[in-house]
Image (cartoon, rainbow, N blue to C red; front, side, top):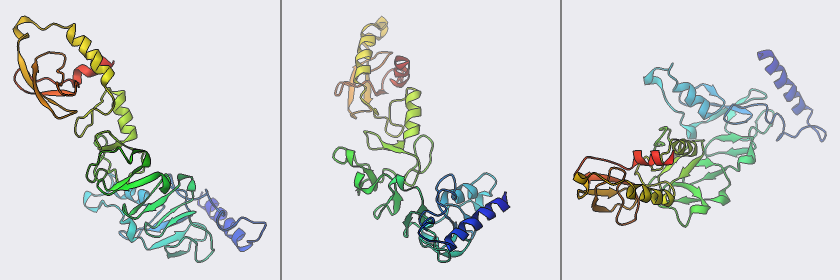
Length: 296
């Protein structure tokens, strides 16, 4: 397998040497043939932390944080400190730059000198955000940087999003992966907290419709609240509980109120939400388990 790769590389290098109008340009030569599962690129990076070669920072981080590595030795690569790259076609190690100093091949159609980042797949519309300090995808014209949240968001929510300080500078509340530089799709909940899109979809599949961080509803629940109105009305309480009053806190609007105790759910007097919790008096109950049954 190794000899086949070497033969392919030699063949590509010879094409560079014979470069002319009828041959592949240096920008296209070898494109798509090199890289890893994370990025297609025509170079490897020399990790400044351990002096080893890797296809990309994710390959480094996965290898150096695996269960086989001693906990003391586990680490992430300091991406901005990368100083050396090796051309995948001719094997020349050199300073970080877009074009190989030896064979002249383009090592990445998208190149960021700040992040030391290469990628041949420019369909992602990569761009560098100076305020985030990293490269992002999706096209700069489609995003804005919120200084309060400390990250880039789609322009479609620029006028209506709720700011949460450093909203993406923490782990996903479901899978606990750090969100700020995650390569997975991320969404912003109405409350302003952030979460992986895949994790949100999994929550919904398990009938979980409240933010894992603040417990606010993650979508319009008005139809369900109407259905709960009917269930509560058709479920009379035993005589010993009919006049029992309890204090509740609404997870959606934050209002507190004293309402009549009911085994199904308690309705907020302020916003009419059933996303409430009992905070005082009577057996402790929440609406969450009842909502799950209603959604099945």
